Image (cartoon, rainbow, N blue to C red; front, side, top):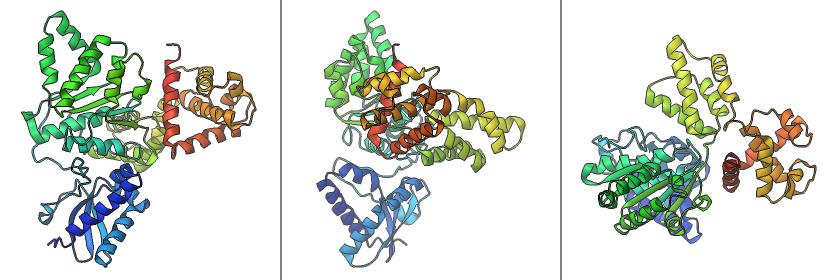
Length: 464
């Protein structure tokens, strides 16, 4: 039987730690890396719930679990250890009245609670839920913010804009908000998921058929608007104006707004400033490609959902070679599962290498010239094309050159020796060193990641 002797002590410890982080200007770090829920306790142990095994390992490695234990020791003068369960595991009868540490009156970020009754929204994919999303360092902030919005719509975070490249999970998180709320409230809340393109087409049709009032009533009386791919709105002035008034009507009623985009709002072109400022009013969250550990976890989760099995060796092979996005990971996994089912035998690493050879050899974005990459990077850093290829050793030239090499290696089929020729006759080892230096830097420098993603978008759009 859970005694619950330390429920209030745990809450006080979390409050004090939260205050410390707030005063030091690191409140967002607290919200992300102290995301635990009190469940029960004994005389020497407190059991908490966490979102995932990955989340617990990260909190341990960052020393945050020890910080909680130390704070509890300060309060009671006794060593109390923390143990954990993953939030989607069945809870015991004793923990049925679980309570959650609440950071503030308007914010409530807790582990995912499974609604008792399963309901399906007609516009939402049934599998796009928080339970099926695997958060990693690249997406934990977006995951927690989206979950908080779903639990406390219109109050916790509003609006939310999630941006990033294709296949990183923007639409999944957006629809997870809708699925969670629909499962909780059913049709009592008006939830609408729509792409910006469909929104625009529907608005134009309402003008043609003289039914604009019906259109306005549909969207301005919602409780939740999930608008996907707002970059489609660029240059569409009439649709932007209508969305501006729709935004105001919903925001003023504390309705939840969630948007997605393939780039930061600041990079959108031909968007009215008044609409742009509203997109930027709440949280703008950048989704980056997942790291190796997260890619493995995603593949394992997909297999668990499908009830399939592929060897750890093959999973490791896919996770190491697919560094682009979740969609590409799923594509490779589906190909391997399909092969296994068709030929009726297990997939070995040799079979995987053979079957995925062409997939891994393909460039990420069609035929892109190395010179285009060099020119875009050079323009971004205000240096010349010849500087990129030169032997100049100043940091002003070395960093852009290494970034150009990194992007060229990822966006083209060129080998290191071939790239060396394109970059002024450099040898294989120099090219490899440049690539690895930037690759390692992206693991710890989020601003560099953002810059590289912006450059890639510019390269793909170059002279279109």
